[in-house]
Image: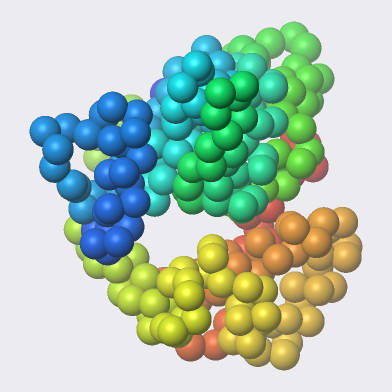
Length: 287
């Protein structure tokens, strides 16, 4: 999420865990085992709720991915089967962010120390938030600094291309004026959204039953492609060539389109689902 200070990025991220369904017994056990190794299992109880971790941007590489004398799990493993929220993303140390690339791809992280060589699970939903530039007001003619738009390019340039390529959805979050906020009608409740998410997850579990995975994020790309209408797949291929997407970006776009269709209750992925998924790919400032 990219937007100026006070636009609600952190609030939106904090609401996400409440939209996720409970963990299965096996998933809850996995999460509890990681917590136990880290010494954070509360009263020895197993919780069915997905974890939410939000480390400060001063966190070191060892804090994020694991380490220390006893090779303990880091935040990316403590968030296993849940949400890892990184606020002020460009302010994190670059080596720490780059160390997340491998676990985001494989769902596991290996911590190597002289006395230990340990692999921990790390299948997370990474959610990140950042200002559009260092001053925070790029695009606001009344408040942006005198170096715009170069300041935005420089600030967002602190994130490497390979890391951004692993982020499926990029959205701009614009602030709502106080007058509109005070008069805004009630929107969809979290409970309603959570029900729709649970229904989509059930569709995915049913689709992949007996195949060793349960979500679109884990499914091999061939299993994802089988559910696309020919014209939808053609759009994805053509648009990916024109946008210069990497192979990873292309396959992640297909996964997002499949999830959009699931949330809409559609068996077949259509052109509209692919177009929406493509709209979420990251664009450079002014691009």
